[in-house]
Length: 451
Ligand code: BES
Ligand code: MN
Ligand code: MN
Image (cartoon, rainbow, N blue to C red; front, side):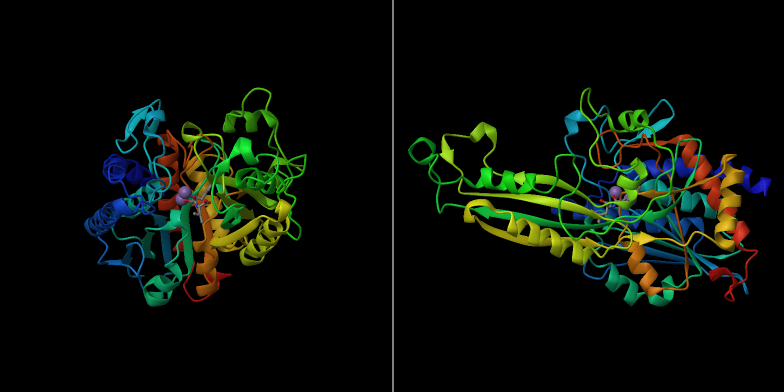
């Protein structure tokens, strides 16, 4: 085992270089102009896996982004482990707010900065590291599945799962796309929220009007929209939409100073909602307005705005149904339109929440591997974010055991500017996964493992 730790450390410099090359590819699937980059990224991932010794590597797509499937068959009697990551990344946002170029990986203070360094190209990196640490011949079957549209809600995933069912069948799946409790303490993510979003459009007039001539007599669409959006929360910041699901989160301590420090909450601004931080983050629904289209301030004039729209994003607590939640949100918006304004709600993405059964021999093996690699006991946490793939996968392969790990930490700033990967976490996560593959060998593939 300790040899394996050393071998993982030995392969890390090469893995780090490969990760940096992947980060240089601007694989933003959500940007139609960069779909070629997503193809390049899939090709690069496929090449790395082939060079690492996977006998069978294919790039597949079902009308959506290219995904990569690589397979190393299981030795007789050994289980097959599916290693998941995604090679698409979020848009970089405002480049001027980055301290170094978003697609040029840059090390500062033990962290590697760049879009996708953590979410989720680091997931690909640790899969490569674990496989290389085993000399390309691990004692279990290993299938790597790297999808290319996770950040867009994985719309073609059900078709991919159906078309490649046999290639993706496994006893255990390890999804390296989540967070850690800290840079020194690993997490096993045991619950994720789902997601449901929509666009709400408001119309009050068939054309703009002089705001002095008609202001005070007929409503402008933006004032209407703002009132509707304000109705989504009560005065304490709790979600005010009726009929949403609430679960129960683990009683972990999450002090207010930690929230302030991890979020950059400004002086004088308070938290919102009631209940403990884990309860609000992992077990309650949340609603956020993530975009508005109306006249920008620079172009504003004294005109009553005839139409305006907003994108509203909702997180769904484990146990809730994303489609039912979207229906409740839609009803709420339609019923809270003042002054008879015309409202059109267009449904967006849906992703189901998921709660994992974190017990049994596979979890015992994972905890032992984490303990050894990190020198710390892993913490079972929820996350407020979503990985829609998990519920889809669990439905397609109900007997596979699901492990949600990750290479992020509280300072990662995924989706924001200055995203970064902690290089110590990269090493510990890679060692954990290499050790996990070795430990899973001890389980046979004949059902024992899937319990
Ligand atoms: N890696 C994240 C999920 C995540 C978020 C893990 C926070 C740990 C902490 C994933 O890439 C992600 O961003 N998912 C999207 C899914 C959506 C587009 C359906 C999300 O949560 O917004
Ligand atoms: Mn991710
Ligand atoms: Mn993400």
